[in-house]
Structures are given as C-alpha cells and as structure tokens.
Length: 197
Image (tube, rainbow, N blue to C red; front, side, top):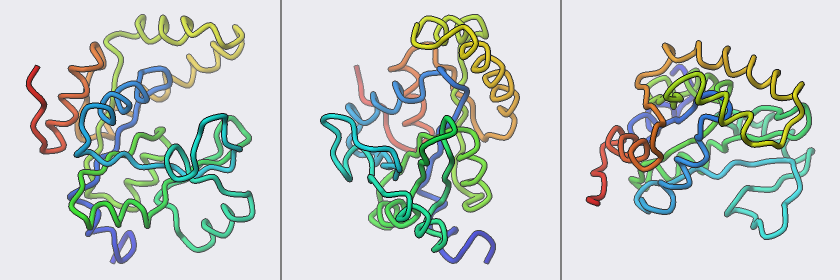
C-alpha cells in the first residue's frame, strides 16, 4: 500500500498545522496544549542539545547524530528536516501511530517541508494552513521579534512569501488574527468541541 503499511491507520486521527515563518504556529499549538488536553501534540526528535529545563520525551526526544541517522535508515520518521543548516528535527512515526491507535486527536505543528513529507506518507491526514491576517502583519511580527539582523529578516521575508504561496496545497486555512479564536477553529476542524468561554 502506498505510504507504508500504517498510513491508512494514521489518517483519521492526524492533523498537520503548517504555515509561514512568524505566523504563530507555536503560539497556537501551545494554547491548544494548555487548554485542550484531549489533543495530543506530537513531540519532535532533534539532534540539538537540550536547553535548560527541557526534558527528554516532554519537550523533545534528544538524539545523537548517529541515533538520528539510524532512525532515518529504518524509516522511522514521518518527516524530518535540517533546520537553519545545523540541527535536525523529525516526527517519529511510532509515537504518532501509538497516539492515533489510542484514539487520541493528534496535532503535528511543523514547517512546510515537513507537511509535504507527511502528505506523501499519509495523504489522508487533515492539512491546515495557518495564515497571517495580512502580509503587513506578518512583516510586523517577523521584524518585531528584534532577534535577527536586517539580512536575516530579509531572508525570512523572502521565505515567507514562498511559504504563503503554498496555501492551496492545504485542505483548510485558518487566519491567525486571534490566538484563542484560531485555536478554537483548529480544534473544531479536528472534530472536537471548542470550550465555552
């Protein structure tokens, strides 16, 4: 069967959230984690070292470069990528499959390349594009971070333009004009009931 023997079993319970840089994917997924315990947020594997306070298996699965290579060779990733030319990040197929098998609603918050890899592996999953209210707002968020040089900001803006052009590849688009509203809309798309306010 295309996509591996367990692709079909993952389809119903898997939702992928992606979107351009600085759109607020992390903020929306953190809100969901804090307010919707019924949603299982996938934990990525990474080759980067833990930061202070980060726990293995909670924030990330911390792997050596050799361990990561082995997991790739064994086809253990639904998706993986090199981020900022240095560390690798990936979604372990086994942890997602286990959560779906347990009847959980699984959310993957990943970048565009990762979403495309998951679509190739699990075409029947639900793919949601998180979009900024306007281009100007995306620029404001990106530049407003104040953590990058002007050159880095320009590079990220160019990347964001390419990423925004990928919106038609997705099943649904959610505008991130308000984190709580966007999170509730995403939870609804996942077939869950948003909490009353």
